[in-house]
Image 1 (tube, rainbow, N blue to C red):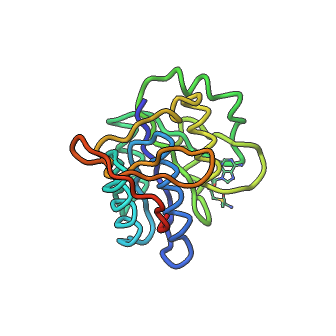
Image 2 (image 1 turned 135 degrees about the vertical axis):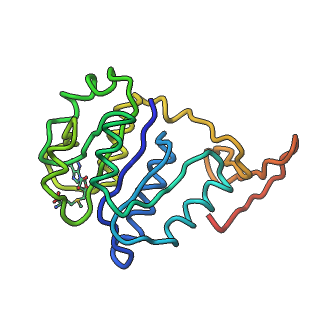
Length: 189
Ligand code: SAM
């Protein structure tokens, strides 16, 4: 099932780190791409595309000036909308229904203040606990529940570098054409 994340109301000064982390978590945990609204921030787009260039996969970030139109067009032409909010129904009660629905999903996460219309446009308003926390934790748990752990085995096509998991220490290899070069220790990570 294909997942695109829609991040509402990005503010470059305050949200740069959290939006970047949200997109990195989305990519690592199985989403295909992300769209964001608010103020356009090329530095977020560039840092995600640098990660994709080195670590592989086809995760794409797009900007929308009009989140309402994005949601409406998604509902008309592509699939269903899940809004993550602490006010929604508990994830444990709705995740099977969401998983059973084969359409593509737009997963909406808020910023500072979520406009009431989002709650009405969403096909599901989903709470990851009814406690306040963060868009990164909410999205990560949502994807983990949706994919039931399969996302942990995902391979990223076209990666230039890859980690070789170690019990202790770091091992990073550069993936060439049929060759691997050991980059360890790789202190820039
Ligand atoms: N006070 C904001 C509001 O009006 O909803 C929420 C701010 S919160 C830092 C940012 C986003 O994190 C929310 O819009 C929601 O997408 C997500 N989030 C935070 N806690 C959540 C929870 N318990 N369940 C689901 N999503 C959550």
